[in-house]
Length: 337
Image (cartoon, rainbow, N blue to C red; front, side, top):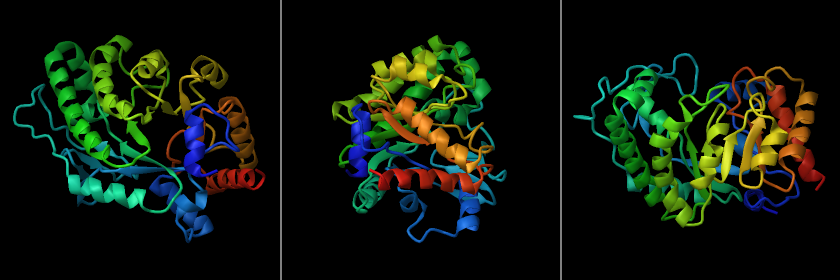
């Protein structure tokens, strides 16, 4: 069974010989890993045996030490060592798009990057990735506090902003759909530790229609939609399923009762993640890591519907021994099947 076949079966809620998985590291965690074990000759992705590859069209450039300007013109300060960084200055200082130019897509870049991954010979499940999709893109331009107030004070501006962002994303999606990709992966955090960042009705009014519009051409092609969102988004899982979500990524076990989550949504959603990078991996022993992997797969992997992974790219504070323990666990499963 190929890696792509395992992921497809998981999405179809069918059992596989062993759970498909993905282990991704931040740059700081990768540095720790290579200092401990040496740089894998075949690269970490191949060394880990990962099942999912993501095709990203994110562009930008470093404009000075530690400062990165993305395709929208947003400058991110990455001097703290974070792979993403924090916004140095918000571009939309007023609730007004006058004078702001949205980026245009580059079909040649999309072609080159897509074909490079599709033709690399790996038997992986290959997803087009838009890592900063809608809400995150809106607040990166306007500021989180300003945008949350705009939901109530400047509704027309929010509608225009979100619609314009969606139009740009739709252009990327429609171009990517010309190629034989396996699905689409989006990143858009809506949750905090205990609840949504905004009232669920605000999410339904402003974000749900644009997400439905985003998912529609993908679903029309019969392809799956993956969504990453940190935090507790239980209030809107039914809404996301309604508009076409197939796979929910992150699934923090410090937030959700995994058995209950599987019981409530396991026939409709595939779960991706659930190995806590927040409260477990930084503190556990390598032995405990393997026990947790086994336990989580038993819960979420029953009758398929699970891609095993840390809840986020592994951060710097996770010991490299625990990353290696995860890899060892999966390779033992491969050998024993």
